[in-house]
Length: 406
Image 1: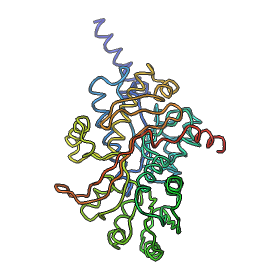
Image 2 (image 1 turned 120 degrees about the horizontal axis):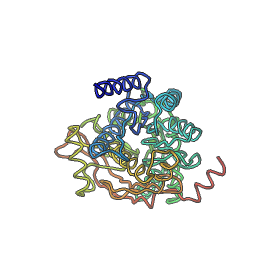
Image 3 (image 1 turned 30 degrees about the vertical axis):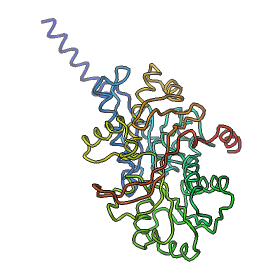
Image 4 (image 1 turned 120 degrees about the vertical axis):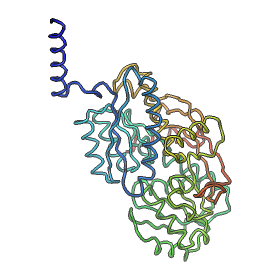
């Protein structure tokens, strides 16, 4: 009889705790709040990040999680809007009680959430926002860039473009943080590497511009040797579609970061423009290493499609999070931030390290040219050139100067 009463009492306690939210199946999880753009053109990139993250997380949780806890997550769609993304970040911290934040593809959202993370002292892992200010002038202890930034893109593009015969350039792109940052990054480094290059003019359009034809017509009339296109996640696919429809790519060489990325090319299918020069941090078909093959096979097995760079970002970000908590030894934001800074893990593209000085992930980059390839219903990159991470990282001296003048 006493045992029956004890069981009944225990059940009452459990029911009571559940009613007041003190105990739930996920109460002891490490909880991650993800803010990203899950609607409109940028969702092509954000959904790949999410799927790569889930692929790694399922494996981590299946093997017991980390520190005896499962890792769970909640998502929010910022619709590529700064005010919405910032509101959602506050809600995730205050109502969802997340242990850390992750996201987003919009650099302006990333910078706004980074300011909040600094104030709230909660780690924020930026997965696709590429402004160099994130870990540069506005960097701090709690923000980490898990992808390349505009400074790294600028160096990579300049290294590749400086080897080509172009002298007269035109710059065109999205009129916002990322567009201007990437244009400045490419041009400033190109001028240093090839002093005789000339900037003939610039064209800037609003984010979400529906008609590129007037800009393309104006650029062609100036007759540059090549065009640097500085578009972000919302503009890459629409611009390449316009380039194909107007024959822009056949009249002048175009460089655009992510132009050879799978997330950009897959939605366009075989209607993407050929001959466009692009940089990217990952191709599922290059390099042909055993580690990359395993990743590709596992991703295709789970989602029935090839992984993109976004998929790889999600995958290694989940693994960095697990390793950082293991190293920290406890679920504590201060300990986590200290553990992640300087951490190295193995990945399909080799060892990856979060540089300790600025929390910027060190990634190699590849430059290629879009072309139809046998066996694929989308374009791939050919003539691939590898640029090691060590050649791309912003110098620590430059970051110190930028932070002094912010």
